[in-house]
Length: 143
Image: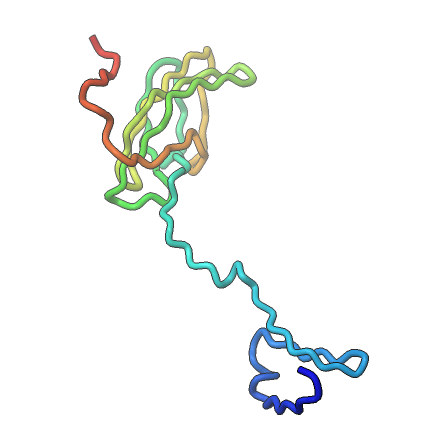
């Protein structure tokens, strides 16, 4: 600013996020802004964890589990993608499932020889938010 005298009041210097730095005969007033704190989230989540509602012990075969969809709102539909999991002797499949809100039921097919034990709150799959209903001409695989 050249040879201009500038009077800065104490309230400005003491305000949150302001720093007065004096170095080599120069005074610099800096505003420290944490941009992460200033961001307002306006987007709804589109991917959700699907967890067990209770402790579960699945015998080999087909079971229906009560599940919770974390952070989903009550009128939002989510869909799981068909998945098959196989690790260390445990083998199970979860068909595509449409869930609404934060609770629902999901089919699990234990195709292994051992029981599958899940504790309450374990993630068993993930679901994606539905943006539009599927077209009516797509069949679900039933004959």
